[in-house]
Length: 401
Image (tube, rainbow, N blue to C red; front, top):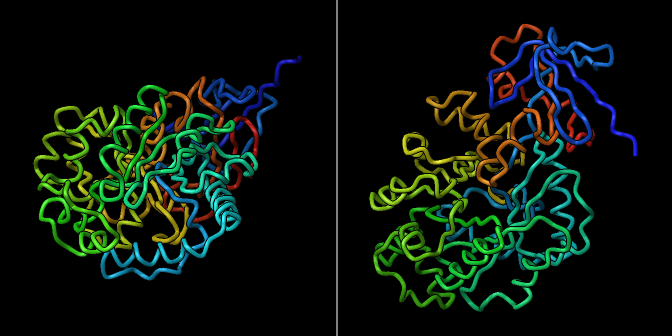
């Protein structure tokens, strides 16, 4: 078998993310991996494809999304409270067939890829679709979602994780208010023993916080109406409840983390490397939540990555738009930091450092090419601000869009 031919791509800027930007840079690809990254003056070659006034950067990583809900775009106006949103999304979910969910996931993957996302961490509530879903062009980890508020997950749920039909899978207890500690602990043990990634929603809303600490509020009353006993509500905040009871494995990806008590921050400070936090800026804005505690997470050294959440609470699956909203809401965040949160931080959350989210020798050749003005001097800021779609997208050394 002949070795694959090297290919080189030159652009006005190359943005490795894990190292400084390169003006007039080159990325050399061999097979599905990056072979070299450097300046044109050092790596010039007759066979180099010149992309002109453009920037090459790593494929983006969406660290939290629900592609099942892609068909719900625009169907739920911003609600007065989170419980109202849950009621509406449950109503819509009851109208969906497995075929509807399959079509929604395929549409969401296509939209994500076209906007520059090459790796997706998707929360999947209908694992049956994995048997008939064509292999996506992008990299997808399927986090199989489990709840037991009304009844335990079916036995086949655990077999889906054990026999993932050739897919990358992870495990995702939904949230402390819909999944018992027993379910969390079983999922955490499975994650640790099988080396599976783990994610969950926690500390997302004030209603959730009030439910666990004060045994009251709209979410408390809504779930009581569904039969949740509330016997476990002892005043402990939801994150502390999970962290102190063996319900979170090492490396857990915690989605949202918006409402935290001082006792929660003390737990995080004791071992900040144990967790990653997935923040969804435009979902945050949709619900009109108080500012995300970005600076406090940063000071503790917590790994914060970005996601889109779902189109039931967002307008698109565009990670560049998430970065723009992050910068709007948090002027203290630099464009370089925002870009790291949409690339390197997601890779770190998945244990994929050196392989995804950066341009370096040995990494997967997942690239995005975006146009830039000829006079660009601040490439990170320019590539985030530019709302034009990518010109080309590569996954594992192959152009897919």
